Image (cartoon, rainbow over all chains, first blue to last red; front, side, top):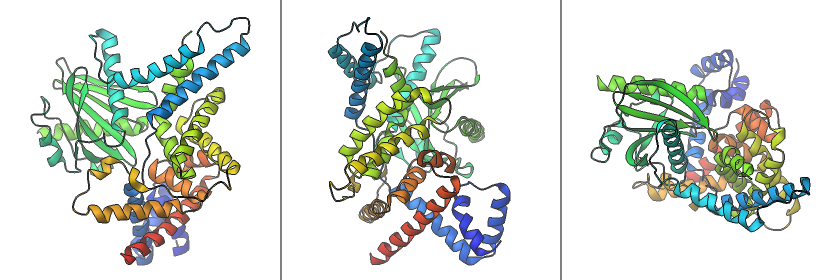
Length: 263
Length: 173
């Protein structure tokens, strides 16, 4: 491979978009060409600076409310057009109120906890875990202690929650520790340990829960994947918008790393 | 009557609303315009929802958002000079991590956001989709509607431009 061909593929190699053969060729060339190695380092540095430095914008609540309102309105219009003989029984301003109510309900569901049992219990925990995950993605909500060092994150939980959550270091597998956070699920303070892969956030929630160990179970809701399991009297939920394959890879590493650290 | 639209909003659009809003903010460089366009795009997404089968909901929705941004820009082309967004919206999570290097970091971040704001739109959108949204080349190709090879070469050229701009601004400091 010559330099021109190599330079053309360097970005794709950095982004992990090459076939194994192409990747091997590029890396073999870079290993013995100082110019191309420099170009590769520049790509990595630029990409890193962009990821760290570019602003992210959270859709404001008022926008969500506007969209819900417009959807409710569009729906009554459709209904009155297609079913002219069955005029909508719900006055439009009620729908607007309902739309506003939904926003309030979504905002307050995070702080409302009912007594729930059986399947509805795990469903409700799932909803709450998911709501916490989504809320954590809002600017400023992700971590209370921001650190890529597991030895800073783990002790931070001491005295804040009634367990010491596992915080395995998974950098080498491409899951970078981002920090920890205190969160509130099912009426109790829980530990949330935060990892990142590329721009995807993984929240691992954990809290003490009696009962036998359970195997991993995975569900998908609202475009997020959730994996839950119980181990040694601790309930775990991992949530992310990573694809299912990567998330289960993460969970396997996390379980392995957690067990390793205990030994 | 149940509210199926509202349910679908929660399950299909809401998880990707921040991504949509971020893309619109970068393409339009104005938060108020971005809100109008994202609202319009959300309604369109629902109208065409039956055309969406399984697949990548985020890429599908962002493609609609992008089209709405382009339509909006064609309509308002001569309305204003482009004013890059101030970088004060950088997430608080990042800010809390700042230490003594705060001032330098803030000025670096401002330089980065300015450099991206000044990129031509076809480079800017690919930088945002890759570096902010973390999308794969295939996903970006779906959003932008160009072949994967084009995604690759545009991304590569965009990074090179940014590297030279950022390198120059560092030397000036």
